[in-house]
Amino acid sequence: MAEQKEFFTSRWGMILSVIGIAVGTGNIWRFSRIVAQNGGGSFLIPWVIFLFLWSIPLIIAEFAIGKSTRYGNIGGIAKIAGEKFAWMGAFIGFVATAIMFYYSVVAGWCIKYLTQGITGTLVTTQDHIGLWNSFTGSYEPIIFHVLAMAIGAFVIYRGVVSGIERTNRVLIPSLLVILLILALRAVTLDGAWEGITYFFTPTLDTLLDYKVWLAALTQNAWDTGAGWGLILTYACYARQKEDIALNASLTALGNNSVSLLAGITIFSTVFALSPGEGIKELISGQGSTNTGLAFIFLPQLFEKLPGGIWVQGFFSTIFFLGLTFAAITSLISMIELAVKTFVDMGLERRRALVFVSVLGFLFGIPSALSMTFFENQDWVWGIGLMISGGFISFAIIKHGTDKFRQGAVNGEGSDVTVGRWYNVVISWLVPLQVIVLIVWWFSLAITSFDREGWWNPLNTYSVGTCLLQWGVVMAVFILLNKQMVQRTLHQKGVE
View (cartoon, rainbow, N blue to C red):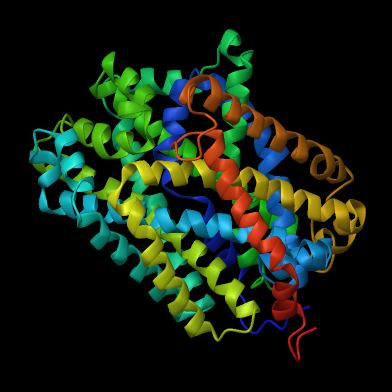
């Protein structure tokens, strides 16, 4: 076990920090769009089911690996699966880091729109599409990308307790208060009840559609932070007496509660202020992109709020304040994952932070300048997260699922005992879900996204681009496996 000198000070502090990982911009903009595209309330049933078949089992696994080994992804997977599989841990860490490169750009967008809310630009502009295109087509996203990375790096510089824990103790409750304020205003609008009814009412035909179930599984894979390796990293700082199953359940349920609150807000607002056309816009997301909903469509809705420009300005500002908080708390965890990886290899923490920050800035520039590049990276590494979840499952199987459950999961500090059901889910159902999801998304690429060039690695949404980028990264890590193990597990004075 690696020596661990800094720990979260309380369960409350740790839970808020881990919820900070899970709660991101996707809870607010992607969740509502996916619900609308998949029949409203019908989507919620499989979404909850897969919370227990994907998210919670993998979150339990990450908590247990991090807490029992005190290593990040490379050392943790090597300790559990065996040293020759350290490359899998490196791949898991790289996927989250590759997402960090463009997620900091998203955080920058949120900060930019927050400033526009404060200055009143959002409620006075007549062309939100033009405003968005003008911003993303300029060099300005680089400035806000740097600002987002600087904020995240400063929090990590402060340390686990003074930085990560204290920041999440402030931002996560603040985010919840903001969402509650927005939800209360939304549900009191005339016509809001129609949106709530749509959001919570399932229909049998839609519920029997396999595509709805696949969408619900995908949302769990992308939304809760399960399988990213981020929770594994934070679990390295868990106190020994922390209960794994309870913490995992609270994390997953807390994350989904935020999604539901955001959904209530958005559907109430859409049905009240833009009946008829609003749901069509919500489904399309302005060009079927995640970004269109948050940065184009919702600002248009805020302009329709009754009460005049000051009320409209207030609610648009606190919406983007909440979105910024969600983005920053997730970005912090991605930076910490990369820093922890290099610290495990023997690099002094501050030097590791400088190295990661510089890399984050440089490799984020292409996504800041090109939406095509951004969308390609989101496609490649978003699906790559499913492989990460599969690698975590493989590591546990290799270790011995029942041995892992009894030793790492139900070990010291456990108040809630995880039963044998976990063996079945992590050994069989999670790998099956990984295969189904990858086949599903690749089939969409071949039949819908890029029929002619699905094989072309230079195309944005192709199978070829995924296989090429994954293959290169895996090959490099397989070649460096021995060196990574040596630096991580066999340094002088480290067991």
